[in-house]
Length: 184
Image (cartoon, rainbow, N blue to C red; front, top):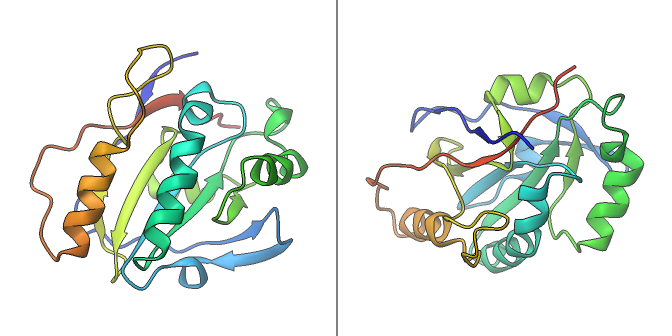
């Protein structure tokens, strides 16, 4: 497993729009349909990446906790399913059900959405404010598979809480790291 860091995104950049199929609901959803009143977290994930598997319980917990605060989460898988069939839409659906995802799990077959976001890894985590402007793009916390550090979501929680308070996040953002997106 190659360790790939996320790319930079300028704070204040507008969230790129998308219209992608939700593998669980079987219908297309746009960014406008999934955005939260107080913020939106866009996650690039997949089924098989050990880094995503490591944080799945935390992602579910965070999404459930922050939904009540008006912040919605959405996950997108952009991996090439011909080379990585374990990330195929029907398996994404089962994965979302098995992990009790409280957020939509969308499939980016063309990989255009991942390219527009300049997503690089799984998980790649983008936090946008209520106006869909980039607020935070970085890691959940310092936990990684096998490093013995518990996954708490310390960094993203701090960013989300500051955003909800109307304050700026002025700390250096540590990039998320994980498996590289599997490009066609």
